[in-house]
Image (cartoon, rainbow, N blue to C red; front, side, top):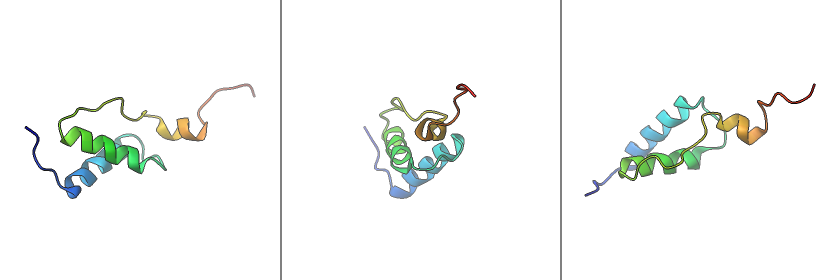
Length: 65
């Protein structure tokens, strides 16, 4: 049985996820949906990469200089 969750609960969990992953820019919807899934008991599916910001921006590679 799933409990009713509030937007405030989702927001709080999404903020936790965002902070845990280094506060990447542009992933608000992904964090919101992941928080909602977790709170509904659907588990943390694939989730968001811990280096989401680098993945999105293409940064973080050690390519040729």
